Every structure is written in structure tokens, then in C-alpha cells.
Length: 640
Ligand code: FEO
Ligand code: CA
Ligand code: CA
Image (tube, rainbow, N blue to C red; front, side, top):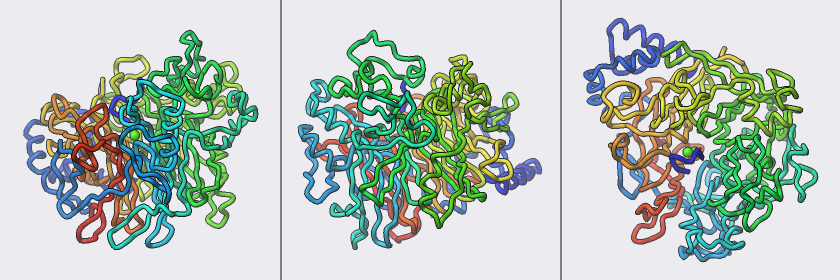
């Protein structure tokens, strides 16, 4: 979803940085040493960057010095196409409305297709995705279909909704699961795949973990508080080593409403943005499950991370309440050396928080039944960052969100662990978690020694009492975003303490010659971007950054072009533009084949809000969210 959707490396690496810093002070200022040293220097260094130093960087930035990065960077683009480096090509895998079953109807661009067609087709607004290999030439993909654009989905552009239209919209949401096969022409969707499945806003699911069955999760239709229908606004994702897919429920609040505008929304739900007015999707007008006055607890059943077994189309998706309830972006999961599962989770809203879950049980590669329960029991934490004033690095710790601890007690409105989890945002505030600039994706470096989170932008920073400027959120009215990195104590992600710094501060050095609006030293007029959102690593440790920002290409955003994908070297901090998307798109969703020779990238909402895109088919065709496949003409590894 768009720019304003927020509704209303390792200890080795650190040592290397320190040595770079030493070299810099010895006046051996290679570009590489200069940039790495900048990270260690902090705010004063960014502000003190002289115009000369900045222009030297701009001149040097066209050459790639990173040993990790082997492609020739692409320029910013305003074209209605996917631009990739020389020697690379982009082809389409699947677009919104394409059939994923053998007898399903083809896409009908009229906007008049019935709900039943959409139930058998790829959903709208492709987002997070994971490829699960089945063999060398076959895999199953699980892909989030985040939301719908009424003006593209309906011939009436959402202006005269019917019950069937709501059903169609619900069928365009959720998750698409489909097999792909490798042919002589490359990877393609296998419409006959036995695992093909659509999961929609109406698919039966189960709430599991500490909050399952709590009174706040019970409705007239489900007095058990365990059986829930559907998932929607599935933003980004995660995957587990036991072969399951994690889909993250983000802006669920927009789907609820009630005709009674005087309906008094409870304070706990107001914190999540629930309002009586339902102008956007209008589900509550035709499906009373979404009518707040009739089903006041239904919103509590959404805002979770859902675990799906993509290899069993009969399996019931599980909403894992132990991971907390908020506007989940993605779920970055790793197994610590102790066997504990660690999951990092961002809550994408201005001034919300960054979280970590640590499982109680341990991963056992030989006990899949055990592994399927690991996300049901554990401890949730919220991040607290500290820094000396004016420094762009510091320390931090994880504060436990456990009933009875840290003020999470009845006196403060928390009566059980279930309530702590259902009202995770309130619990985070109670314990004093740091308010962040919209935490989007978290990605864990393959060395497992560091993790990164995109903080996309935040116009409220410095303008609200609870969102002071400082620490990892160093700019007021933050329009460009930044990426924070943390290194857990002892290289162990289950520990409470960490060190942090900023990998990049996005900015526009062409418009702003110095200061933080110019961005950090690894941002130049040639690689600039705004609003980092999607984030992921490949096996070699290349960092892939996807943007969901302003694509006006003017004023503060001049020279940035359309939304894009960049490749970063975590060690040298070099960043190069790898891909530029079509008009008015967001680039979101990333997965690879195991050989890393095909990269799948999501192009979401080209032509949103009536912008003149006809991607991917061109001519006068309707723009459609599409997964593209990037390959090299020489068959090599992507990015190398
Ligand atoms: Fe769905 Fe926060 O992006
Ligand atoms: Ca996103
Ligand atoms: Ca976003």
C-alpha cells in the first residue's frame, strides 16, 4: 500500500568497521573506509559533511567497489516498465486475475467478473511471498494479496457496491498458493498443481496460543473464540525451517465499520484505528461480521501472524496469538544456536514499535510435530533504543511483555497474558517501548549476527509528544526514511541487550546539500530513494531494499523516479539501484529459487489512483499487480 498508508552485521563486521574507522583517522580515506567510518562517527559526522566530500562521493558512486555486487546500476526511471541492469531480463510470472486452477476463467478487465471468478484467480496487490522448493524443476509459491483497488476491481469503481461485490473483494484478498514448474522457457505457473489453493477473507482458520478462546475473541458466530474466518490485508511474510509460510495481517482496521456513527469504539480498539465510518472497502454494509455494533469483538480476531502449510491444501491456517496483535509487517524468523526460534516483527504505523518473539521450546529438525507448536509458546518483547544525544548509534534492550511484569498488571488494565497479546500496542506503551518511524520489514543477515529494519517515513516525528526526535528516529517530519541495524549481545538473538546504528539514512543530496535531509554518506544523487519498505537478504548476504515511497519525482523527491529496488552491501554500506518499477507502483515481495538464479519480485499497484500505467501488458490495458522474474542472460546468480 502507498506512501501514506500508515493510516493515519555482526560482531565481526563491527570490528571491521572499527578498523575502517581507525584507517580513516589515519587519513587513509578510501571511499570504503570513509563510508564505514561514517557509521561509527554519528550525527556530527553527517552534519559536518562538507560539500566537497559530498561531490566526491557523487563522482565515485557510479563505480561499484563492493565485492558482493557485480551488476551495473540502473538510473532512476519514470518509464512504465521494469528496468533491470544490462545483461538481466524481467519476465512476468502472474498478474492479478490470472487463473490458478485448470478450469478457472481468464482475467476479465471489464470489472464485471463475478466473485466466483476471483476465487479461482490470483488475488490483487501482490506483496510478501515465499518459494518452497518441491524438486529441481518444481516449487510451490505462497503469495500475499494485500488489498484491493476499487477503481480497478469494479466497473463502478466502488461507487455502487453490492453484496456480491464485497464477496469478490474478499476473494481478491488473502493468500494465493500455486505450483510453478521450470520449462525450457523458464518458470511458469502450473494451473494443474495439486497444491494450488486460494485462501481468502472467508477461509476457516484457527486462533492458537495464549489468547485463543479468550472472551475478547468470542463472537455470536463463534462462542469458542477459536474458530475465525479469513485473513486480509496480508502485507509481508516469513517462512519457517519446518516448511510453513507466515502471512502478516497489517491494516485490518479499514475493513470494519457500522452504520451507527455514534457507535462508541472502545479505547483499546481506537488505538488500532478502528472507526465507525467504513468508506473505503464498505464490507460492513453487506457482511455483518464486519459491523462493529453487531460484532464488536471481530476486529480482535485480526491483526495476527498466520501460519500456513503450503504443502497441504487441506490444512487449516493457524493464527499465532503469541506473536502479538498489531499491524504486522513481516515476520523475520531464525533459529538461534540454542534451538530457540526468534521472530522479529514490525508494527507499521507512525510511532508504533519493533518487537521480538523468543520461543519457549526448541527447534528439532527430526520432530516436525513439535516444530508446529513452537510459535504458540514463548516470550514477546518490545524494543527500547537508547543513545547519547545527537548520536546515530547506541544501545538498546528488549522489554518483556509478560502479564504480571513491567507494570502489565490489573491496576494498569491487563488481566491476563491473553489481554497483553490482544492489546499488544497498549502493553508496549505501558512498558515504555521506543516509538519508531513506521517499522516495516525486518531482515536477518545470513551470518545471523545482525538484523535490520526499514523505518519507512513518519510525518509525525517531532510533532507529537510521544514521538521525540532522536536515537534511530533522528529527523522531524521524516519524509525519506532510514534503515536501523542491531547487533545482539554475544551474537545471540535471544539476549536482552543489543548495539544499534543506522545502515542508511535516505535523503536527497541533489536538493539538500548538507545535513540529514541529504541522507547518509552512502546516499548519492545516483542511488537516491525514499521510503525503504521491503527488505531481504540473499544467501550471499546482499541486502535487497524495496521502496514504497513518493514517486512524484519532483521537489524533495526530484531525481528519484518511480519506486525501485536497491542492492546494499552490509559491510561497505554501498547501495546501488538494481531495478526501477513502472508508473505509480510499489516494489514489494521477494523470493529466490534455491540456486539464486531467478529472483521473484512483486510489482504492486501500478497505476494506482488513476495514474497512467498500463503495466504489464501495455497499450490501453488495465494496470495489474504482477510478480516478475529476474534472470541473467548468462544464467548467473542475481546480483553477483
Ligand atoms: Fe503493507 Fe507496511 O506495508
Ligand atoms: Ca510494506
Ligand atoms: Ca509500505
